Image 1: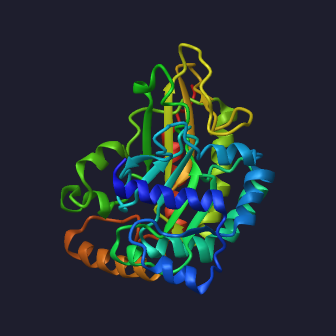
Image 2 (image 1 turned 90 degrees about the horizontal axis):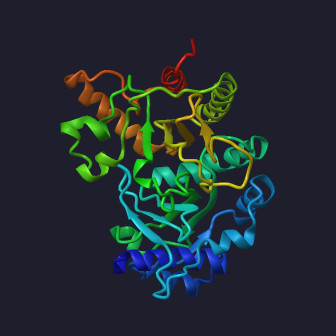
Length: 343
């Protein structure tokens, strides 16, 4: 872990373990303003997320906090996993790999979640405990402006969520685990495709496979449950004006039989693993990246820019310029197309 990652990690851990109030004193805010790397973070709506963790998802609070502690004598707690996406976010995992921490460097993303989506999200997750929307267990924000966030040396907002890859690192066949970041293939994706994809480094693009080269072999019951869950989840996202979300699909060999810890203590589900109909694979799936809202200022400006580009390039419909209703329809159709129809 580099010096910058270590300081950002310490900021996150301080917020998790010390529960700093958002309404800090003036002196605390002045001191925090001069931070370059280790910002003073606080939990956003801590009672709401504690309710989700404890009462809805049945997570033990002591075990949750222990997930952030390190058994490493060097004191390096969170494990950096580099840049996993196109937004410039940085990622950490907890020492036990149960939770993933993602920075949100773009203001329109965290503002959308905090102001528009968080209430709807909490209500939806409470009413639909098996929802496939990724489980956000904490949301961290800086207690005030800071030099580090202004100049980009430290992110001011972080989302803590379940890690659907939990168990991979200790699996004897971890090299055979496959991950797919799936979005409707009928769209053009500027962040991936403009100028040959040079908007993102090759190291990122190689890890984000956006096409599943096979079919999901599911029983009729598993197929019906998957579609039912996704219909409810995407209806919520449509109501919030969100587009450009993806289905994060994981599969790994079912044989030899072994006990691989799932990302949640619950009965067999799309989080813990669904066996394929032919017994060859175990599938996991969650919906990710639902922070792009059509009504926010930067997405509006980006939409105009991309439409201007498309006027000359003729690249066809784009994920970030489409309507939430159309994106939802194509997303659900994509999932249907990936499911093998039994004879």
